[in-house]
Length: 120
Image (cartoon, rainbow, N blue to C red; front, side, top):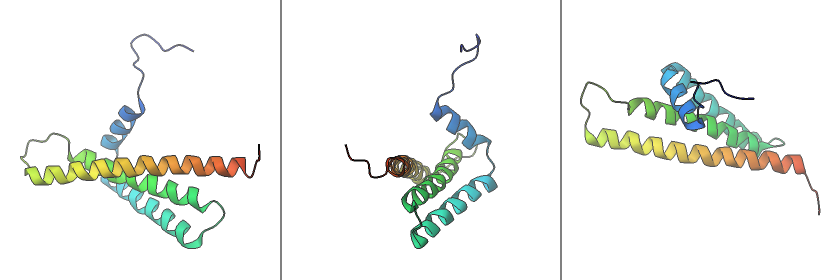
């Protein structure tokens, strides 16, 4: 399948950035709260596959936190203090790092569940 002329291929980073800017604050708050709730319940109840559930919840919560920080770091007409901007930058960096780690853990947990106890 070929892409039409003039249509650019969108990378994952560009897609997430565009989605973060297009999402409402309420939607991002729901992402944070629901992700934290899923992770908390999975850690508390420890059902079958709890690692995958908890890490998926953390990944969603961290996406919401990253997106809020990404929106705050967009250029604006009003001046901001440098310390506040640095704090938003730190939140964005930490949320992005923890979100990627949680996503990787979720993938490995799902792979471990799919493979089971295979012995080669």
